[in-house]
Image (cartoon, rainbow, N blue to C red; front, side, top):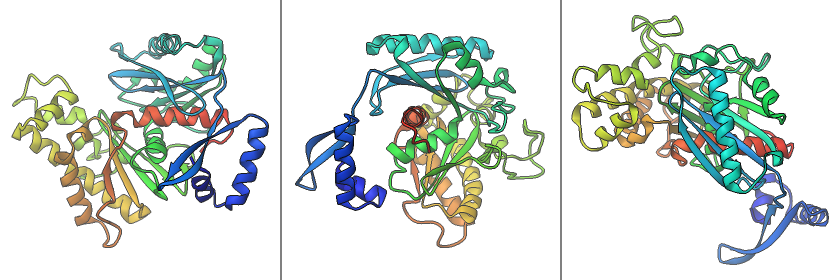
Length: 359
């Protein structure tokens, strides 16, 4: 950021920012580079990268992605691999570690230069115990303290966070949530979750379980949900449910990405199913608007890759069921980082903890 941007972001005076920058220059913590801003000469301030790196890991039902980044959040290497069917936590963690070693080697770093790891998982995490909650997406991980298990294996600090929370943070700092004071991030894929950034901080709830929008009741007489209730949003609009709905008419579908591609290529049946899901999600999001009144809602996940086929009916439902004046033309946007929001959030959180400035 430039010094002017730093002053605006922190609320400090330009003179105070300049003094702080000079102090950090004296101890070699930052470097100042000439740049331009709005056509004028400016000073760009960035952290001095040292010989340490962090690793961000994003795990979902089908794949694991690993990225290595330096203290400036610059991704130096990134690898991806399908998850082994069965989702046993020991096997999945070993795969993630193998990929981390590969990514660090590709980036030119040794294993002893690893300073910390941040792991995004599609499950609620009890902030009091560190245990993952029950998850149909990663059933083999349920009730396991994954952070402690991984930390014992590698000997560096490991942070574990719900993937929707990290998606929210990734979009807030680097995506289409930049500049928002209150942000809601939705991830729509194998499951449905949400993360909140309120007044510049992640909101996790009393026990770290905030954001389970997938279990908002849409129809109390609806299908039985994995949580034990009936008519939850996930039982109408999650990826597996949409594939099940299309099973008879499209028996050759290979998964959510294939479904989305067919919708984008004009398949009317698939488009209808995805649009219906967008409408159901919009009804739930309208409730969030009425309660939180956010100034940005960012929609990510595999199904959001269908773009306006999904987003247009979502917006229409939000406008129909929310209180007037809680909805603006630019309220609901697609994730600017695509399906990488969670991974970017994981990297940023790892660096933030490394520099003792966690959200």
